[in-house]
Length: 73
Picture 1 (cartoon, rainbow, N blue to C red):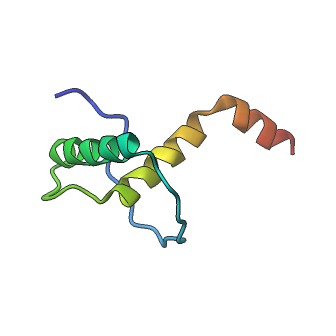
Picture 2 (spheres, helix red, strand yellow):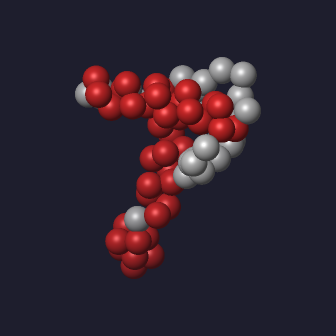
Protein backbone atom coordinates (compact mmCIF):
# COMPACT_ATOMS: atom_id res chain seq x y z
CA UNK A 1 0.00 0.00 0.00
CA UNK A 2 1.28 3.48 -0.79
CA UNK A 3 2.20 5.79 2.05
CA UNK A 4 -0.38 8.49 2.74
CA UNK A 5 0.61 12.02 3.67
CA UNK A 6 -1.89 11.98 6.50
CA UNK A 7 -0.92 10.00 9.59
CA UNK A 8 -2.86 9.39 12.80
CA UNK A 9 -5.27 12.18 13.69
CA UNK A 10 -5.00 13.86 17.09
CA UNK A 11 -8.16 14.46 19.07
CA UNK A 12 -8.44 18.21 19.68
CA UNK A 13 -11.20 20.51 20.93
CA UNK A 14 -13.19 21.41 17.81
CA UNK A 15 -14.58 24.73 16.66
CA UNK A 16 -17.72 24.37 14.57
CA UNK A 17 -17.47 25.54 10.96
CA UNK A 18 -20.07 25.00 8.27
CA UNK A 19 -18.96 24.82 4.63
CA UNK A 20 -20.38 23.57 1.35
CA UNK A 21 -18.30 21.17 -0.71
CA UNK A 22 -18.71 20.06 -4.29
CA UNK A 23 -20.07 16.51 -4.48
CA UNK A 24 -16.89 15.20 -6.10
CA UNK A 25 -14.73 16.57 -3.27
CA UNK A 26 -17.05 15.05 -0.67
CA UNK A 27 -16.80 11.66 -2.37
CA UNK A 28 -13.01 12.00 -2.47
CA UNK A 29 -12.97 12.73 1.27
CA UNK A 30 -15.06 9.60 1.90
CA UNK A 31 -12.70 7.51 -0.25
CA UNK A 32 -9.61 9.01 1.43
CA UNK A 33 -11.08 8.33 4.88
CA UNK A 34 -11.67 4.71 3.92
CA UNK A 35 -8.10 4.26 2.66
CA UNK A 36 -6.73 6.16 5.68
CA UNK A 37 -8.62 3.86 8.07
CA UNK A 38 -7.10 0.80 6.41
CA UNK A 39 -3.59 2.30 6.37
CA UNK A 40 -3.68 3.35 10.03
CA UNK A 41 -5.55 0.34 11.42
CA UNK A 42 -8.76 2.14 12.38
CA UNK A 43 -11.83 -0.03 12.78
CA UNK A 44 -13.92 2.31 10.65
CA UNK A 45 -13.24 5.42 8.57
CA UNK A 46 -13.40 8.84 10.17
CA UNK A 47 -16.22 11.10 9.01
CA UNK A 48 -15.32 13.64 6.30
CA UNK A 49 -15.30 16.57 8.75
CA UNK A 50 -12.64 14.81 10.85
CA UNK A 51 -10.46 13.83 7.88
CA UNK A 52 -10.63 17.30 6.24
CA UNK A 53 -9.24 19.17 9.26
CA UNK A 54 -5.77 17.56 9.32
CA UNK A 55 -5.64 17.78 5.52
CA UNK A 56 -6.21 21.55 5.67
CA UNK A 57 -3.74 21.85 8.54
CA UNK A 58 -1.07 19.98 6.60
CA UNK A 59 -1.74 22.06 3.48
CA UNK A 60 -1.30 25.31 5.41
CA UNK A 61 1.84 24.02 7.17
CA UNK A 62 3.40 23.13 3.80
CA UNK A 63 2.56 26.45 2.10
CA UNK A 64 5.87 28.31 2.15
CA UNK A 65 4.38 31.49 0.70
CA UNK A 66 1.85 31.65 3.52
CA UNK A 67 4.52 30.95 6.14
CA UNK A 68 6.75 33.68 4.72
CA UNK A 69 4.03 36.33 4.77
CA UNK A 70 2.85 35.23 8.22
CA UNK A 71 6.37 35.59 9.67
CA UNK A 72 6.62 39.14 8.31
CA UNK A 73 3.36 40.20 9.97
